[in-house]
Length: 202
Image 1 (cartoon, rainbow, N blue to C red):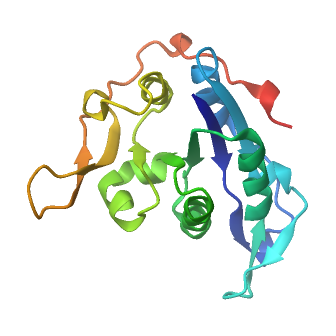
Image 2 (tube, one colour):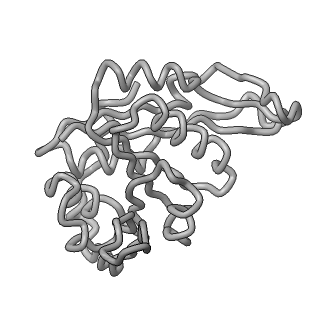
Image 3 (cartoon, rainbow, N blue to C red):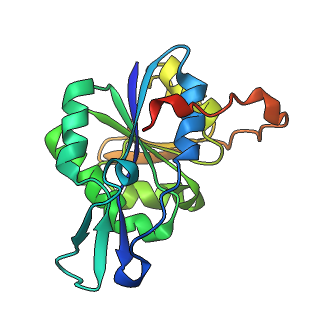
């Protein structure tokens, strides 16, 4: 499968600017975990628009930092991924994460969206209820879980630990259900995780 891993732009109060730039280490670890069997690219909005600041229209004290959504769409159109994986680590990313998810779905309605990170891991069921554009939430450590999802072509989801997902109910009138599978066991040997794939980011 082809997967595009995305770090969204941020919203920041003006006194934070200019803000330092750090690498998307979590996405680099995920890329390393899947690269042998799948085609993977990273779109880091912060790096792609490292010197871009746009005032948030509904709150003049805040600015967007990073590439705008049209630049992300250009990457999607060029790469044509089967899946987009979005990193949602911080609670303060809520605005930009939701904007990014909604934008991707509106412009690529058949594209599957997987979201992971510490924020969504706290209450993955609530995240799915509040964000209709998300197809699957990976909670907890994501490297092995993401690889299994891609290896199984996003099928047989009931067999994959560490995910929460939507499923059409078999019961008449119940509509869609949100299913949370058991957590994945923690990685015991850290050396079993591949080193981050730094070569695919600017």
